[in-house]
Length: 629
Ligand code: 0RA
Image (cartoon, rainbow, N blue to C red; front, side, top):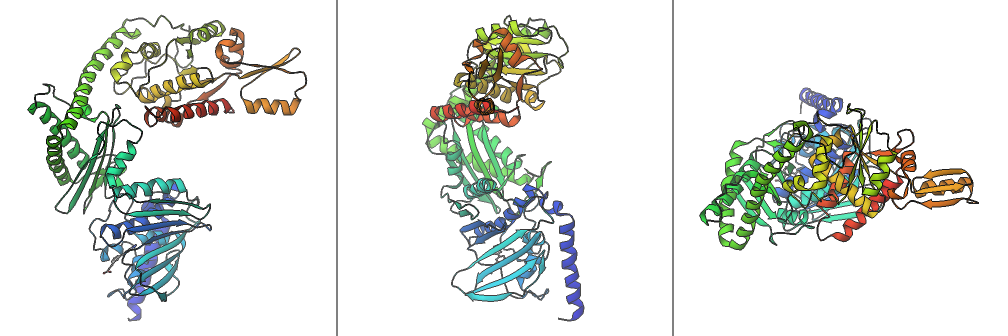
């Protein structure tokens, strides 16, 4: 090697790594928690590529006590021979030169675009140190780098009859805002990867607190669908699985219906969740709609023509494609753009599903019946919506009779309390400040919107009363310009029943009026649990912790305790003083996370899982009670 070209070489490396270290976000998205975890995914992706090429079936991720992480695979091992033009071991070229990985790449499903696939050299550049250990040709090789620069020659450090690659690196705290790897974040992504790559064994070991999980799903995406449907009542037992390949594009689809009304469809390209969908998803939707419409027509089941929405009720599906040159588009680069993929997915799914329907007529009947039902409900919902709209106040209808409205007409200053039960409703009406506080007592239980379709929502008295009182319309994008109150306060007993009603209410807002939560308009009233009294001195206590603290401070001597079992046990003045008066009250503003949690009770824990639902609600009630606001 002549001196000149060697020098030029080093300068390129420095320039490259400098670019990565100067603008890390350009390569890994950000330098926060997400970017930090992305480093590991980048290394894992390399191992997965080796698996997809058929040379590895095992990946191990180890989180070490010192903050470093190892990613290990049992593939062929990164080549170590001297690179013909760079005159360095191939592994050193891969590790120190941007985008050098592709040159060696024999496997065609590399991920490009998006955030993945930037290459292991980026991980190296952003690590305080990186050790690579390669088992290959009977030997164990090792090389070390610091902040991307080579600090030791590639050396043989032992013999072995195994093959594989192990990289161990410590993310550079000069670059990253956080260095704390989260086990849970890795767990869910690695589990997803194991589902998406049938037969691949992935281990996650956390040496920091002796945790270990292992994923290996021989059933691949079929098992993924079964997992998503595990707490649901299935229309048929085994997911339908379709697999095919055309022009080097691999397609896999797994489908199962459950008896809910929700759609759970995830699409992937090259193991990346295409959140914004794309051509593979369009191909799938078109094929499924066509198969079902054809079946209905050919078997004279109905004259209805079903739409996309009708065939998706209760559908759980995974669509996974592996594409040689993926084009990722959209705002977050998670929309697949390759136009040929649409036709490939569509014709494969159409063909295979048609065959499945012909060979399994009883299942085909169940699916089509459910879809026809959905279409009828869609029509009923349209009619019910029109009716609610006509009844609603701004279209000349009247406010619900049960509503005790306030005088204030400016929504920004007006509040509505949605109160459980007539007796508490009565106290609230007497105790309120009628100037700006409206009361809407609910008699019955709120409908569980998970178990009901939108037409039932409009027919449900409690829910349609809420909709009418708020003055909003429920169709598609909600128009909140006519919303009558900017504080919507749920006031329920803090027992299991009350929490149940609260959860149902939040679920309803989350599903149908999410914007109200996003705007911060929804609140939970917190009523006191105890009144503690000594002579003329009395105070209200909102939770057990507070009570404990009070007694620790003041002693118990001479105090009497009254426990409020429900809102109804308080007289109007007490209710005003403790729970409604803006000066003293404690309210919890509902966040999207709260609502999601409530929603989850009724989606994932629905139906048969009564026990876990009960447990969740009791815990939730506890949590709300213990909030220190
Ligand atoms: C290119 C060629 C060969 C292996 C690899 C890349 C490889 C890269 C990584 C990164 C992490 N684990 C890996 N395992 C393998 C093999 C060339 C040959 O053996 O002929």
